[in-house]
Image 1 (cartoon, rainbow, N blue to C red):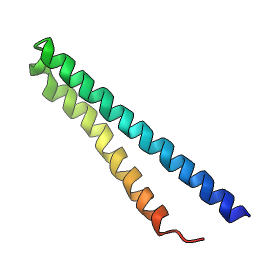
Image 2: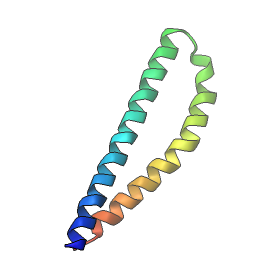
Image 3: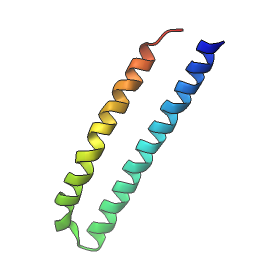
Length: 74
């Protein structure tokens, strides 16, 4: 029973993290579109580097943990 509960909770956590990642990517794309419409695109490289410098390592770590969970057998 405990293994099943752990598995269900882990799957829920993975889904929540994946949804958060997708939402953050969507918000960034909207920001990019908005900045281009306002002709603020020259500011993008700095903002993009800040955002990606934080977000890419997080994304990679989440992907690695998801792969580990896929290999986990009950």
